[in-house]
Image (cartoon, rainbow, N blue to C red; front, side):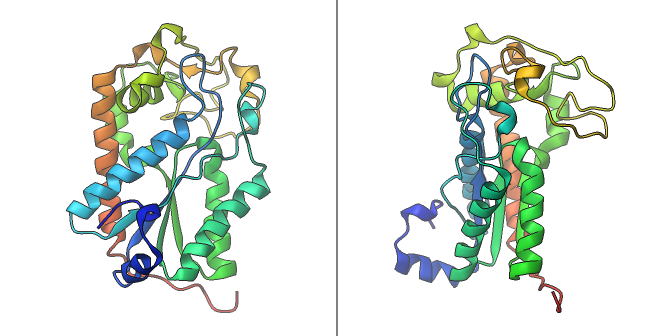
Length: 264
């Protein structure tokens, strides 16, 4: 079984549907990642993790395929930096919903939205709810890193505040996957000095959610410690994340499917 749905013909998809496969939709963003990383970090990492995890899940016996990545997302907080392309919240939700509706309309019953950008997360949760209760379509959504938070906590070398955006984690993952696009000589650390009620690190933070432009928070667009990034350690973390997502895909392939409540 091929991993990439884009490589199938329509008769092959028709045959594939009889296997009741999981279909993974990587969701990224097109936004600044400091002076040292390219605009396509989130889309690249979401797609890379999805493809590799699907391959590992297939080896484990699950039927899994991956669509092309939705390459732009919800990034208004990065638009002060040149090159960022953002959708508004309604357009983003509509695009993702239409992709899911198209897949479900053909008979895909196990749809996973694998997210690579924190700014998309809340909107994806809303999409999951509206698709289920308004369209009768069951969809799962998650950030790829959330499957490996324990591994990430053990892996890190930075102090709190070192893993947030264009940081130790993302820079290491890019060094492992696309080293040709990483300019480590331009990497500059930047830590937030803010209230404990606000998040300043991917693995810790306060309960409040507030809106802020990244231009207000960081002159370079970085929040974290990219100077600690390392290609070998990045490869180790990428392997751990891929393995964790693959385990979920194998599990999800065997889930009993729920039906929406009547009277919606």
